[in-house]
Image (tube, rainbow, N blue to C red):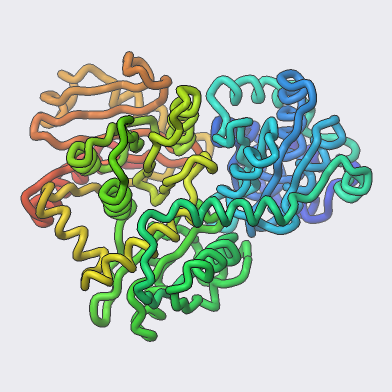
Length: 550
């Protein structure tokens, strides 16, 4: 680690910002910054901004891109790549470096003129028939993070096999290079071209075509882009819908990677929605919604008098699933909906009611996109009707192969307008569905494990949870069934995930995050009503807190 540190400290032309960080490091910071290479997988890279091999910076982005370039040149005769970026600190710098690096290697590059959402990157890959795509984003993580997502030629995030091959190429590259290529020079040489306005308009038109039952009932909403990429495309679609009166959360309107009003820009949490909630009450809007910085997630809350009740990712998913399925015309071919294994089981009875095949996939929207690709290969992509995950990601079309908050925003607004025309809100509809199908409750527990020691602790906890069932202290586990997605023949790709099917009918799923130093435990319970279901979740939470405490 010290050798690596000294090499960085003495590298010619080291950018001033990184050099100052290096000079200011103490021993603990040197260790954390250099103890490993920043991990690369199907989610690409994600890490804290700063100097070092375990940080997001120009050199780690350069190295990853050179590895990607080698892979593309191996796999394609004339490779091309689409590039986009969000509002985060250095996102544009990283995007332009990635574009210039690929272009210097002989890869044709298409890049947006300005920041654009992740789903629009997926769309650009397919629109320009690219070999790959690169999206610079850390999604909804705090401001100190940034990331590097890689997409395949199908517009999905890369497969496990592709990630392993790219990683092999990355490992063969040197981290430090004498000179980084010039974006301006590659642009002038025509090796990088800007994605034209026609591609953006084509995306908007395809989103508009995904409307299920357009309704002109007037809606008054509050919207927050959370200082990210959603501001332009989401507002453009609301304008085209024609029945939306929108108030913007001005403090969170414009792109700002520091997220000054929202330390954790994630619409899943109430803190991120606080300004939108306040404005909704002030202006007496029907409801509010927000999109995360790269505009692939959406969160919403309905005003009830002088308070706002937020809708969880699972609950919005079942609302949209029911809405899409209930308005779909019957065809000879069975429609298909897709959800992840950690997403609510309430989707099961809804799909049964409408005769929709429900497919379960591993966590990660790339696996939902993969199912669209399989249907496409069968010649029936139109069978796909909806896909969703508990972490506020939704998709109803096939032109994008990742979760899309622009698509979701249009669906939510349209659904809300139809319900309002019937004198109902989304909360009323949710209550109606619960009365019909029962109360399905979910809870997510997150345990943070920073640094090298934290990774070791997570590995130990997962190993402990794989012990023989008879060795568990809790009766609840000793009588449970367990699916180990790493070692079990489930038909799904091997993944470090454990699912406990409890004798009482409830479920616990545990997995390490693929992008953050966290262990996640998903708790599932069903009850006659909310208090009954929540009481069961309390029991499960207490047990997991004992097993997974840091």
